Amino acid sequence: MPAPRRPLSAVLALLTALVLVTVPQPASAAPPSFTHPGVFLNRAQLDFVRDRVGSGAQPQAAAYAQMTSNPLASLTRQPKPRAVVECGPYSDPNLGCTDERQDAIAAYTHALNWYITRDSRYATKAISIMDAWSAVLTDHTNSNAPLQTAWAGTSWAKAAEIIRHTGAGWSQTGINRFATMLREVYLPEIVNGRANTNGNWELTMMEASLGIAVFLEDRAAYDKAVGIFRTRVPAFIYLPADGALPKTPPGSGIDTRDEIVAYWHGQQSFVAGLAQETCRDFTHTGYGVASIASFAETARHQGQDLYPEIQDRLRHTLGFHAKYELGEAPPSSICGGSVKRGLGPVPEVAFAALNTRLGIPMSNTQKLVEQQRPAGTNSLFVAWQTLTHAGNPH
Image 1: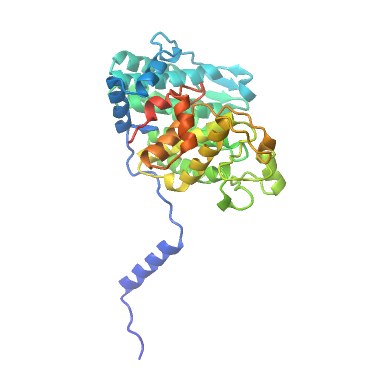
Image 2: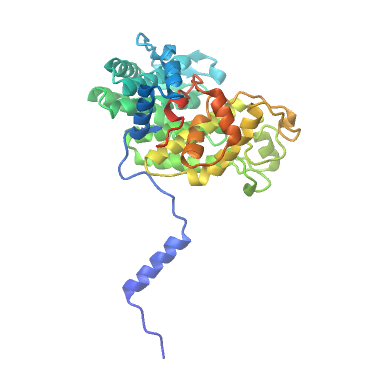
């Protein structure tokens, strides 16, 4: 006797279920509506910082004093915008490179100070810096243009997001012109990434792209940045589960063992937490680690939790580099037994995410973070992370 036929609706439901099981589904996509402020910091984090500074709690009190004593926080600071910023290798030539980066960090510094104090002078200064640049900037040129664009873009997006969404008094004309600058001058230079560069380049480019995408509410740019990030992180930090050799960035053309070893700056063997630039130096490695954490924070504020897929890599690389940064001598199997230290003020955000919020023990990283507090600025794109993230549960 033949089996009874299933209703068409049941068949369609079964087929849909099979498709959902067999076809890989994205963990998330750009949110249907964006959360503001939501670039690097959300409102709950900002309120936490303001409350800690107001009560004199440490380490925020010391970190706030550090920030406000920096020349970047001066209310007499005058921006130095130019139409074309030209940056060669290691910023040589340096035609506006330092000025742009410093002005962007200054705008972010004043935006933070505005939120903490509600003193309108700081909002006015942040706005004047951003308005000055959006009035004249048209391009970045020379070989370091993508990196320069990313460095400045990360800070601009953080500053603009706070000022725009906290009642700081930025005119709609100013907002629109700044948005046009980010959309036309910054985003095209960075949103497609650079697969064949050292990893810190593309990671910072994606950090800036995501921040700008949130500010612009550009869902396509958001999705593109997340897609590149999710392949670049595994190509930057090694785990034994990757196999005998590290993963490589899609589209980089790096395929053979010899090419991979050269790309990893001569490293022949691979251990958990080793980064693609470890044997170059810890400073550039730190840039990449900082951008990984900052990217994940912005995505989290937009409802997309990337930590489950990156937390093991992030935890291992922080612990790996922290022990050598603290003075332990590396074995001969790591960078020939000699490393160039100088990780910089970068572990605080990742430590807050993994240890404070997720409760993951990180003894070496904790020792390094506490030793470096208050973490200041690397004068490129990292600034005041002890102030914003130390012990921040939000």
